Length: 278
Image 1 (tube, one colour):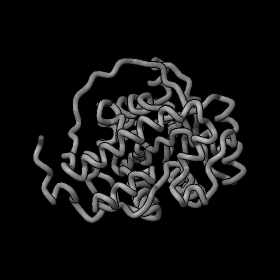
Image 2 (spheres, rainbow, N blue to C red; image 1 turned 180 degrees about the horizontal axis):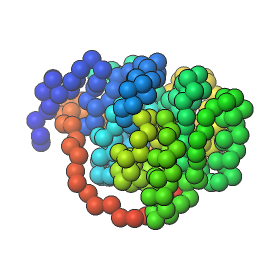
Image 3 (cartoon, helix red, strand yellow; image 1 turned 120 degrees about the vertical axis):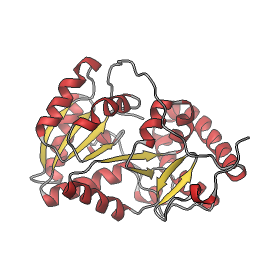
Image 4 (cartoon, one colour; image 1 turned 45 degrees about the vertical axis):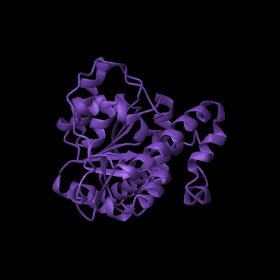
């Protein structure tokens, strides 16, 4: 068994906490938006990552996913179970920050300050509906480009060129893992877009195709249960497995906290770029 990390490694600063082998940023929503605004002003990269219990489980055996999380400039807890675990482990994170809430906060910032956005993901008809909804909710929002999520790997370079040419301030990716990670690994550094945010299934929700849990469920940390009620056949088995493994990993963290993962070199192979769900 590896020796536990030293106290300095467990908490590098007041704003970061080492949990499950990755450094979470211990921030509140207003802090996240403020840091993104600074990145816009300075034109520096802000790659946002969100991590829930399922990703904690899967990243241990998925180097592509793990590398993508390590590479993030801000890594946030999008899962109430991680918040509860952080408190149990005495490395507390202040609050759950859902990816869709960051998405909405950044859209509000873009609308208020005249910043431009680019959207990649979903089926073409869903993407069109999303843009209509955003234009209604944020009149005058500058959507400088978009592309559906069902494109082949051979089309990726052309899409990256279009994003680069658009001069977008923010790029929102509603495409699934690991396709999102493959795209960002290949092109993220050359796009010239300050804010990069993978938003998972948020396009479906904001387009009105699926419903998000009511606020009360969100406050209780039961948004996962609401999704389970909507799609029990698809999600029940997945939740039973990932939640059970997450509980075991949390128990292991109590006994022997994991050291920080390091990036590993891996070969990626061209795959079709799909859409929507994590």
